[in-house]
Each structure stands twice: as structure tokens, then as C-alpha cells.
Length: 305
Ligand SMILES: C[C@](O)(CO)[C@H](O)COP(=O)(O)OP(=O)(O)OC[C@H]1O[C@@H](n2ccc(N)nc2=O)[C@H](O)[C@@H]1O
Ligand SMILES: Nc1ncnc2c1ncn2[C@@H]1O[C@H](COP(=O)(O)OP(=O)(O)OP(=O)(O)O)[C@@H](O)[C@H]1O
Image 1 (tube, rainbow, N blue to C red):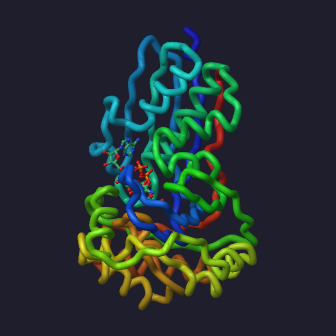
Image 2 (spheres, protein in one colour):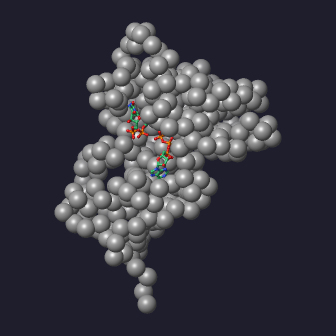
Image 3 (cartoon, rainbow, N blue to C red):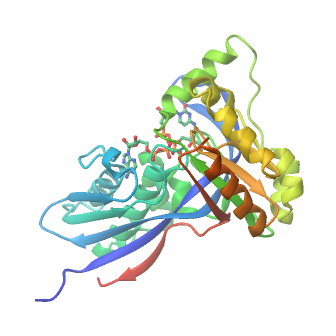
């Protein structure tokens, strides 16, 4: 018996090196100046020809990943099939390495991976702009998961402009027990701001220049996340995690996106290994992972279609 046709796609996590949040919009979202950097922690999504749509997930935290229509990869397969007027006959298998609900866009990565894998499996050859529009319908972070590298996200984060990056940055991620809800963190951000005037969000020219130059020493002081005070308010223990990474020699540390993962920028692979070791030994995080960015966006790594 021959194996059913299948396609496997690798998808990266992200860190927001700048996340500037505007006032709440009428539709409940916030306009952003969102500078994304993809990092080399990956999920794998395999799409295999099957009678019906189903999903399975293995890896750390996979027990918290829905296996019904709440799974973003399932929604992606349904949307792509509907776009082409076909029935989504596919089995999706996710191998998780991106922390679940960690502020690193794991669900978004799986959605982008499922889209690309199904498009290849079904031979639908969807044009890039149509794929990106489907991504934006699935979630604000999903277009970036497809594109990878580095990009400025405007609007709610879905309108992307790719950014040049002049070198490799060495990061450490401190992973936390349990997740934080993205809507709850945005709500807390609004609550903390109260009636204060919030200017329209703009990218920081110094940060974009540091990225373009591949200059970690210049990028460190420019790192910024408007959601950090909210994440710290909801999870006060993150302050000790940030202090631990900085004391261990990181150039800077910040909450990754909506948290609770914390990201530390370091000057080299050796420094990253030392910071990861100190964080892991401190008891102030569940685990620490050293990695690099930028990383490629969703990429087909195996195809038997
Ligand atoms: C925190 C970030 O990860 C930074 O990249 C993103 O802004 C969140 O992106 P995401 O998880 O793809 O979010 P979505 O699925 O689009 O939205 C989930 C919820 O987050 C809030 N949300 C999200 C994006 C945005 N620009 N403003 C918001 O207020 C809204 O409450 C929304 O209902
Ligand atoms: N394929 C998926 N992988 C992980 N979580 C998923 C997936 N599909 C749906 N979810 C749900 O989405 C919630 C958020 O998970 P996710 O890992 O995407 O968070 P996140 O990294 O904080 O997202 P972001 O950084 O985009 O705000 C989870 O609690 C889970 O219930």
C-alpha cells in the first residue's frame, strides 16, 4: 500500500522587537506599530490527504491546543478550501515546539503552516496576495508567520512591510508555566492607560536602523513593548524573570508580545548560552531556550504530493 500524499511545512515563532499600541478602535482592535522578528523556534505542520478534516498535536503544551474548529490550523484549512470551492479533505498533524499561549504566535504559525501545506497538497497554487488576505482573516499575527524574516505590521498588525536585517541576533526565551490571554492583556493595557492621551503608533527610526545594521548593542536600548506593563500586572512574577536575564548579562530583556514568555537579546551565541543557563538554574522560568533571528517564514520541507 502506498502512503497517502502529504506535505510538511516548518513555521517560525516571533518576537516583537517594537510593539507600540494605539488607542482602542471601534472594532475592539488596536492600531499598532508592530516590528516583528521571526526566530528559529519552529512548529511543523503536516497535511495528509484524508477522507475528512481532522487535527492532531504533539509536543510540549499540546494538551492545551484545541483539536476542534477552535484550532487555527483547522480554520486555515477550511478557509482555503472554501476559497477554492472545495471540501477540506485533509488530516493535519502539528508538532509543537513554539510555547502555547506564550506570546510567540504559535497558533498563528500553525495557521500559516496549514495554509501553505494544504495549498501544496491540493495543488491550488493560491497567489501570494490571496494567501496573505486569508492569513489576515485568521488573525493579526498570521500574515507575518507566513512571511517571516522581519517586518513592520501596521493596522492591527496584518499590513506588512518587509524590513532589512543586517545580521544574526542571538536571543534567549524564558518560557513560563501557563499562558496569558491576548485579549485580556490588551484590555489590561487600556485599563492601565485610563484616560491618558495615546498618540498614533509609529515605528522607531533608531530601532529600524539597528535592525538594518545587524547591531545588537544599538537594538537593545530601542526594544519596546507597550503590552509589557499589562503582562507584568497580570503576571507579577515576570519581573523576577526579566531581572534574572538582565543580571546574567543580557543586553536587554522584554516581555514577548502579550507574554508570558520573556525575550532577552544577547551579544553572541556564547552569551546566549550563559544567559539561558542562568535563567534555567534560577527557578524564575519553566525553561530557557537560546535561538537566533531572523528566521525564514513558512517553508515546505517535505512533499509527497
Ligand atoms: C500581541 C501580538 O501577538 C503582537 O504581535 C498580536 O497583536 C496579537 O495577534 P493575534 O494573536 O493574531 O490576535 P488576533 O487573533 O487578531 O486578536 C485577538 C484579540 O487580541 C486583541 N487585539 C489583537 C490585535 C490588535 N492589533 N489589537 C487587539 O486589540 C483583540 O482583543 C482581539 O480580539
Ligand atoms: N494550533 C494552535 N496552537 C496553539 N494554540 C492554538 C492553536 N489553535 C488555537 N489555539 C488556541 O489559541 C490560544 C493562544 O495560543 P497561541 O500559542 O497562538 O498564543 P500566543 O503565542 O500568545 O499568540 P500571539 O503571540 O499571536 O498572541 C491557545 O490557548 C489555544 O487555545
